[in-house]
Length: 486
Image 1 (cartoon, rainbow, N blue to C red):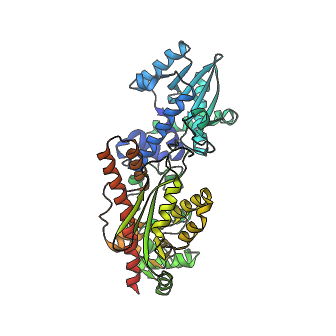
Image 2: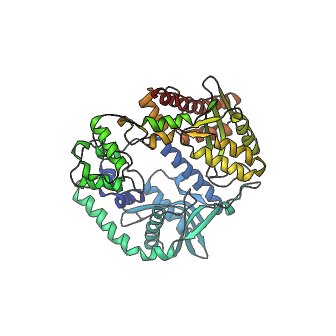
Image 3: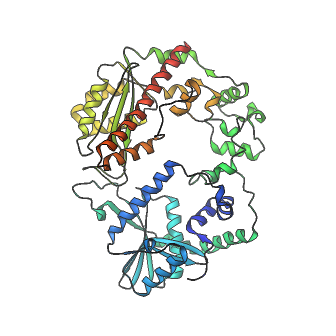
């Protein structure tokens, strides 16, 4: 275990996704894209779930807390194995210069089993490949290694009283398939090391691998010349596979395309919109949309929280829990905020009904979250079904106008989010100060719940309400923008 490692699990999985990304990661890590706040929060969630999973096998020694580098981790792991330590967290192993860290390693009856923890309800192909790779290294370094289990969250678990980790998690052996893939990893490790020895950046063209299974860390570097205003990749509502096919055939700019390449009429319209730098405006369809919005009008937006680890009684992993609804009628804002997560969600349902009761039409932008929330509340509280259904029937979704190309501005490119459309049509939006995404809003809410300082809590609450209110006001302003077209 004393030789230096040239590959980590992370770098090898990058090699599997894209040889160029792998080479850049090993030789030019400073060119990596800045890690977004959303990705940072996703990493933190994974860390929290992994730490909790250690309670499945308590009393272990955490190698990561005792060491500061890979060499020390390898040496400490070897010491613990020599002393037959029953449970080890973050144990380090290396085979053919490939270094891995095992979330949980357990020794029972002189047989080792490993556990790889994922903050997910499902086992993806990416998770399986990750597990097969770990199995390969352990198989070649531990003579008494027997099996590796993927540990995921149990979708059927409900929090009742104290959290029960043994019921929260479920385990799945990967042994059979992992054994079948041992030769594959031998071969692929040769390829990865050969690429490093050649010391030449692979000429890998852009393609689906830029986004699968995750967006590449070097997306900004590889795509810097492909995101110009005239790039074909700015065309919306066209399958990425088709765009990559065109790009490989030599079509780089929208001006190089011709009408025969487009299979659908709406795609031709979009192309001509870009070519002529003209908006698509279907006044008759917009007029009908506006005509259907009758009586007093209210804009509404909701925020949900879906913690991986259940926090409120009766909830499940990743269950969507509404904690804030805001409204705006053109003059004043209103909201309902859940201050105690263990209070009945019926209070939220009743507040929702009350907020929309005096309005005939409710404006939303991409109603998916709102509809799903109301449907869940209807399922939980059948006695409120009629009122909640009436509320849902009042919804008018401005998102449909833009995604349906009844109104399209080439400046949207392929982004139809509320912030994108509003920035183009209304100018820069000033209300989004500290919170810029739904995932950030969830993190703010979680911090609010954990804080014991009432002043700090109020600050977090105000930020959340302001963020949600801004969405409401922006939706209302977009509605008036469409009205003014007529």
